[in-house]
Length: 309
Image 1 (cartoon, rainbow, N blue to C red):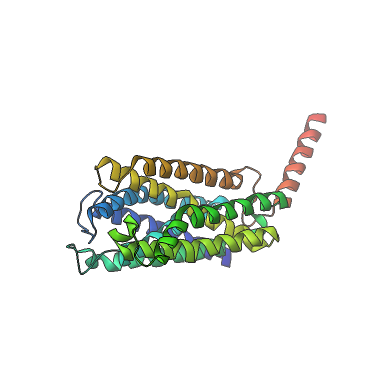
Image 2: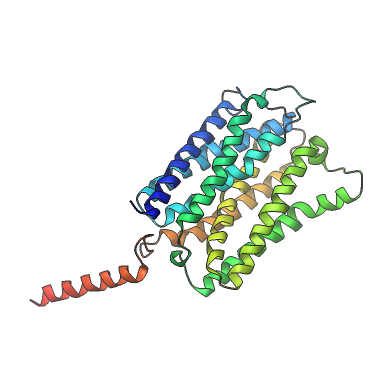
């Protein structure tokens, strides 16, 4: 067994554990059994239900599909692994740091190890997926595709900074924040701001610049950022829908519609950017694309000779 086989085995194992962890956390939470009682307000509990629904119906199944593709040595497997891994790494800190431990009833601190494990496994799976991918064999490998993906990276940065956080930042600078989300739970609000502006935005900027320079590593980074795009906006939309269904006082039809449209755009956009990795012409991790092409041409030549004889 070579080093690449070991990397695949590790990635498959991490993906399976991640799928189990996401499923267990979703079922134990307010979505189903309500064993985990988060120290959240009613609005945040509604948001937690939407988040757990996406984890159970989206992230966990994708982790299983990615594990199967990696074990089958399909080139899309490790790339697809970025979707559930970045989702878990982004969401787990909110389970740990977001609750109001001193002001609200609950018991989620008893599940600290579970949520910490989701964070560690999410990060570890992201690293393992990165190490398994060969950037030279990512599809499409053209400079035009790099430019298109760089535009997607910069578009994401503009959406997060201008569309999502600019008014909130201005509100914070005023000294007496009036934002409803901030007043609901300042810690959770600022934690999400930290993750968005301190992690996602720098990663997207770096990937976008790298793609403009056609740096090989930037293709892998872009797929990781695109993986985050695939489910996190959908989770935000699911939160808004749950609040609307449960007649949450903080829910508005306009905001819900905006989040649903944004989730559709980003999720469909991520799917279109991932699609080239599923083309039949994509190379397997251990087999260069040129080798596949040569084999295919040789097969055609043999077939012609057979017909002529």
